[in-house]
Length: 631
Image (cartoon, rainbow, N blue to C red; front, side, top):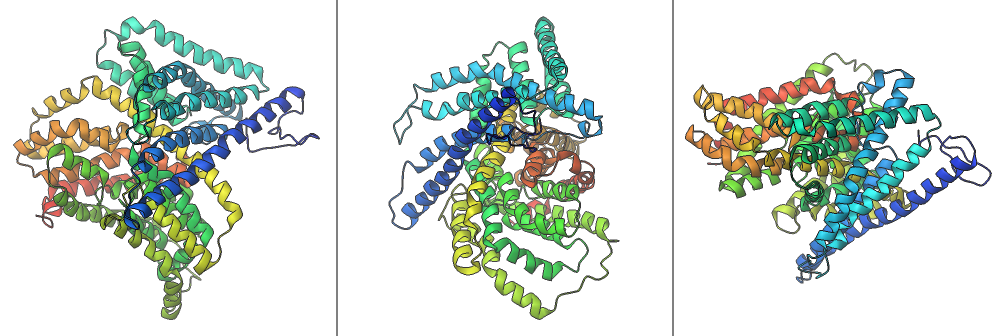
């Protein structure tokens, strides 16, 4: 089942380390065909996304003739990119999964759990296959406003992607040589499905207790046993909808479509690719050499740079995953060279993702302003200092963990060396400011701005650094599609889970209960922090705000809490939940971007999460940190 181990027979077919028999040669050949029919169009789609969005910027800002269809075409291609990328990630076994328990099991049990993960994913694909086809048929009657074509061209990406992932799952199962293990995994999956189905009459009498059963017990069980995160979320949501409600299962596909089609997420693959271009062009190397010369002699120096770097670039794309994708490829290679533990790196990356949620131009803050009527300018002004408070606390944790690191033999760079490194790195260091200026000045949207960075990085690599390796661009496009697919499928299934929670009436019950809290404003803020940490772990920021903002902000006002102050507390709390394992989607996005197993960062992130909670409590206790600089 390990696709990384390849042998090649006399016919030239890679057999993935399997016995050289006619059966396994056929499986390997079909797998190669599947790789070709998914990787080539996915890579082309990444390239086309860049060209279409960059063309939109040029046509609007340079020749003043906007392309009215560019966003619409980009959105159609994006869903196809997300689904094909998910297939590539599935074929490569690159979908994120929690392996903390799996890694501790014996080799035999580990092999069984790995196989069970494939079977569970295949079960979800089978369950969702026909509903996805129905959804695409329903979308056929919708016509796009600019291109005036049927929406089926976009919606068909879902059933096609699910079908191709099903083929990839079948190929993985066909590779299994231990039939006893395969039968056992299939039996466990079938038993679970049948048992839950037979319990349907019981579930329909339990009301909202089902939320705990499906979204806590079942999700935790699936995640901890190594089922890929996206499929664990999807299975729990499908079970809840199908067994406890009378709603059609096509709504799950609709919510997945909504979650994976959010326009701002277009920046995820583009910033992932930007990070690769930064490395291939030599810009990343120049930037790291300057930072190393400046802080290389300081214990934990590059960790401080990560905190500051995320503060600088946060918000420029509107997607936290994209922000992390812009930072990690620049810093992680050098941190690895310096012996920094991978778990420590991914833990700090996830923590900085939570830390910078309030930095403008934050899409979450814009959403709060739109649903509550709060001044967006006041929200933008109020978000800078709270993020700085959390940054200081994260730096304190970095200092604690690195204060005894032996720096013997590490030479401090001279001012002349630092100046030379700054001169070489200046084009690279200018990139975050160029990107932010493009957004602020209205040259490009948060979705388009990454294409400006890509164009700038390519031109710098060709004409300034002269290190761009063109041969590596194609594999980079495929890797970008795979990584983006693994992230977006998690977001899609998590959006389905979020919808199920809101439709249950849980949100309104929560709001009513919070009005009865003792302790006045302090008690309300304390419970809000706890509630939004929990909500942040299962809801993306935008759906959570849309659902709970209109309910809870009037209650906060009744307690005399300033709107901007409450907004900062809410956003920071959701950020902690979003990036805290084992349920936080953002944590797995950080692991996917870093290429680090989620189990590696579980222990290191605890200290950072504690620092983030303390920082959020400080922001909650001192309103002036949020409102003293913008009102």
